[in-house]
Length: 125
Image (cartoon, rainbow, N blue to C red; front, side, top):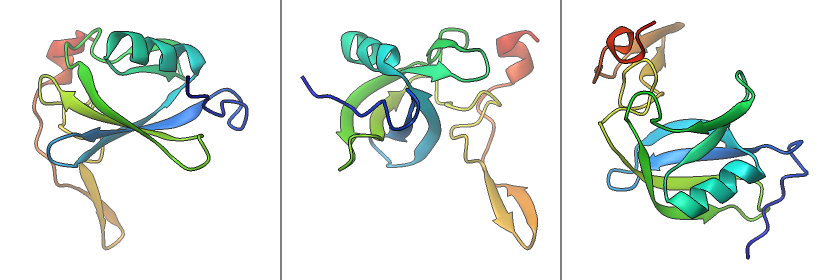
């Protein structure tokens, strides 16, 4: 079994989610060993949410699940890329396909992505 180096990041490793068909970078999150094992077991991307301090099964509230198609591990075994099928079309909790929906231009952030869903309706907050 592959051993990731969770010790380096204080138990957390960066996990990049990338659309397996288009190559679009969808998001960056973190995994701990429990999230890693859950991802391997279920085939769905599972992360560790630093703000809520718990496992985050991507899509558990929104339905926008990430089905893991391939996993890449960097040379130091301390960062992973999940190549995923993004169910529902949006990875971002703000309703965009990618969390990287803004571009830096001339000292400002410009929205370059299109909203896929209204977060107020999906999360009912």
